[in-house]
Amino acid sequence: MKPEDRPPLWFWLIPTLVAGLRMLPRISLGWAPAPEGKTFLGVSYLPKDFLQYAAFIRQVGEDGSFFFYDPFTTDPQSSRFVLLFHWLVGGVARLGGLAAVDALEWSRVPLIFVFFVMLWWFLRPFLPDQKDRLAAALLVGFAGGIGAWLRPLASQLPRDLADRFLQDSSGLHGWSVFDACYNPLWIAGLSAALLVLRPLLVGGERSLRDLVLTSAGLLFLYAIHPYATIGVLGIAAVQPLVTLLSGTRPDWRRHFADAAALGSALIAIGALNLWQMQDPVYRAAAEGIWGSQHLSVLWYPITLGLLGWMGVVGARRWITTQHPYRHAIFGWILAIAVLHWLPILNGYKFVFLLPLPVCILAAPVAREALGSPRRPSARNRWLAIGGGIALFGGVAFQTVEDVRSTRAVSAVPSDLMSVVETLSELPAGNALVPSGLGNVLPAFSAHRVWVGHWFLTPDYYERHETFRRLISDRSAAPRLRELVREQHIRYVVVPSVRYELVAKALGQALGERHPHGELELLVLR
Image (cartoon, rainbow, N blue to C red; front, side):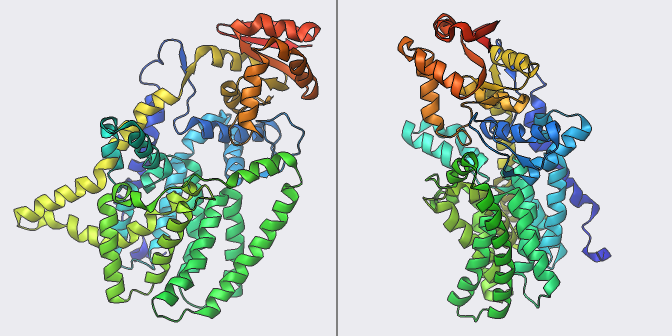
């Protein structure tokens, strides 16, 4: 990198501050003890998914295998999950003697720095002026909409509207890059996506080596984050369409070469999937990609706020000046907008790919607007200060909200964690436990559970209801014994009030009993 292409030293304050703020919710768990009768899991971001990540990560410490099994079901299976990010974090945890949850939480810090290294490299063709690149980096790090400002007021809305607003404008969807930095997997996926996207979006002749690297890059991205892979493919496909609609002739030769590179990677991905889909457990999990959880673009005025308006102004300038990469960035936004609004593909998983191109378009506009305090006009100074607060103030609200919510979502009954600690010291086996405990146990032990995770447990809702019925209905005793035999269950956990009923149903199969407050751990013979 030429000296003039290197970022100034103060640039590194951006990822430093982002990493510090994103780690604050986890660090805050040590500020005060958990509520009475509760224990902190040590998880800050969306426990139901983070525990799933940790359950895979901890497997690396068992045998170092590159292929993972699904610990959230006791069904027969072979290890066929390929999760490169989880494998790398698991390797670090194994070398450093870290717990899976701790390794996952602290992976944010190096990943955020890696992302900003990639970002600076990625921005150069689109924003040749270093000042614009620095403005883009600030927007990427801290800019967001007004959703976080409005969420405290949601209680004043009618219940249905409040629930919809809190769900669809949630920072957990990644409506800003700052939001996305809360999920290390998204940052890893976004960093790898930049590696693939820059050669696809920037014009010019491509050598065979470039095409091979593009193909390898897509494989690398798929191994980290399949949804980001779909996003990249959508962006690449939409780019020539946007070019055509603008009245410009696309560079079909380059697009066909890129399609061949991406297509060769897709063939390899298809072959891998064909092998993976032979396993019924993997197949059941893979089918979960289809779903109706999508988000409307009509939330943009709230979720993008002033940043979105500046992006529109910047887009108009790019059109006026005939910016050479306008079609690439417009196509990127269009592709992700379509993907996250699709009602068949759980589109909310694509939102985290949206803010970056908006920040690129908005960067020159923001630099000019926020430079106003240096001008003599008091009006301009106050407008600039107000604009800065509107752009960046949401970070403070979001951080406070995440600190508060982390203490709530990370707190679980102490009895539950006591059972987990006891089970973690026992030989690995299949466990029949309540679904809440089943979602936690694989993250801290080598046990597999019959029902645990909403996505990775086949027929999760049916099994959840079946478990409730088996431990509360005396007539279900034969079915309970059959399930224990079929699934080779070694451990059973039930509420203490159900102990007598379950113990009678298990009969001679019951071995040891370990009371844990409101829960009973039963070790079978």
